[in-house]
Image (tube, rainbow, N blue to C red; front, side):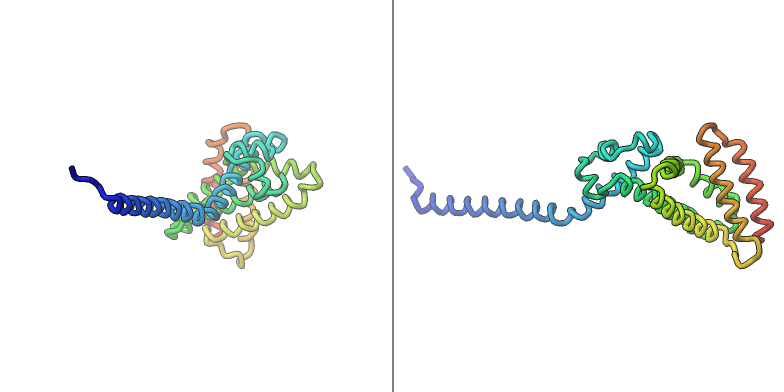
Length: 228
């Protein structure tokens, strides 16, 4: 009867061990790559989820109902992870409103990236008003109201509102192709943004879509007249 020599068994055992080691090493390398490469990306993704969750919570629950814990649960992270990114409640909510405002500005510019904005001012007016009728405006409003009553929050929100206001004005000037060296143009653009904020406030309680459409038509005609 044919037998298997001790040498053959030893060779197979050695090859098997080497194969197992190779498999384990390969798995280890893959795990190391997975652990090493996405760590920064995961941190960025966690931060983004927290910012978006914070704005959503503010819009839905107001300042009093929006704690760090509530935001962390909505974002699917621990409270500790949230506080690692944002040590204080004020840090979290001011950063959140600014982040979403920047995202909206970028999206607004992309909407008219083909250069059609100046030729369709009615579409631009509609898009600018939309900035003040969504969850971002509602969240920002809750933050402003809280800042009016909380000394610790007020200076941060005042500075934030100033930055967002300047950026909104820049976007409006850019999309409307407005020449602010001409008399009255800057005031007209700012008046448009103030009007949009007022419509946003009106929309908080009732559906003001019908009146908003009439206002959009009137402002588009006014801008054509003033801006040329």
